[in-house]
Image (cartoon, rainbow, N blue to C red; front, side):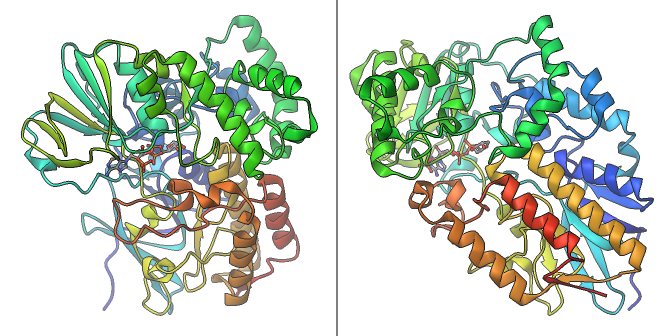
Length: 538
Ligand code: NA7
């Protein structure tokens, strides 16, 4: 049957977050027609959705913004070293306006599925509304942390008070005054919410399953003098970011933990604890994330800090992770997080000891108590990296969906494509360096590589691009091998693909390329330079 489509373009991009916006910009420069679909009613992706109180960068603002346009860099003044969500969303809206991006973005449009048509060598994209569109190249910019997940608890819909998942936070202001609030979840998001609302609420009860090693963010406003210095330093800073493994301004210390004296070690760790941002995670001794003994010693240092900061020793012990070492899960960055537990109206419930049995009409019932709340905040995270792909029905050459193909292990080439899904490019997909990265830096690399591939295809009249099974198998094996020896692979977290709120997400997986962004970039560049090895172009 002839298909009826609303619009036919050279490319469709799914998602208008940081990746999708920049991809649109780059493809337009090639003279391609592009249609972007965005589920939200505005641009910004993560920064559009995650409006919960306290949402902010853990990367230095100026390392996070787009680097591709000098005029944009020159005109934008970040207000804080670690900008809060409203500022970031303002920035992304500014970018959308400045480059006139909105005219090719259709908002409030969630993509339900995409079907490959081998005869036409084109994709048909179907929206939730049933509307269909058609394109030669399909580029996904779905976001690695966009498929939010709720606990699988009975009674969630029975609750009569207000309740929110942090990533679906309402646009209207939420009033906390005098409210009895529950927060479930103590990951990077939970920590930001808890420390921010603690002083505003009537009472706060935190339901913690696993504590995390949180360390001080030490945010500050950017002074005028700093602003000038940041602007003048942009070229050198971006050059440095190209060289560090995760494109952060922090670099591992070349020394091993046990190569220095105990005094020197302690002094160095004190220094790191007083440094803003991720320095403590990324500029620590070089063996901190590979040597269990080094890791345990540093974890003990951070545990001491927690004990010093939390007045009630029992609560302090509950907040100290016992089953994983520092940095083997995402390190939440905090501002007076631990001090929040010193407030008389804040309490902590260990739900490993006393599990939540159900959500009731008036609150939360654990195995030992029933508590009443006016508001429940679910800071329960995401079906990371592959979850956003699973929620779209991508159907490839042999009728297999991508979800089915990746069911028993993700298979990709360069984390940017998968065999059986021709002409589909997966920005920030599994197996690329992006989710171990100061993400816009890796996004720019992904986007620019894809744009160059599109330019090449245009020049050579190529209408079909697919990776070979052999190249895909090699890359996937390489990615698995690189993760060997890293302590994080031994721990359950979104970084290892675990999410017990999702059917089948109980086995650890390697989702990220761990060889570092520079090596990843070299791989990608070598592939392009050699005329796109590992791929069939026709
Ligand atoms: P995370 O880091 O995945 O944290 C989710 C939190 O929610 C974590 O503490 C979980 O406990 C907890 N959780 C999840 N499901 C449940 C259920 N069913 N019951 C109780 N507690 C639960 O997500 P975030 O949003 O904080 O951060 C995601 C990333 O966004 C972050 O790393 C940054 O890169 C930005 P668990 O640890 O699984 O025991």
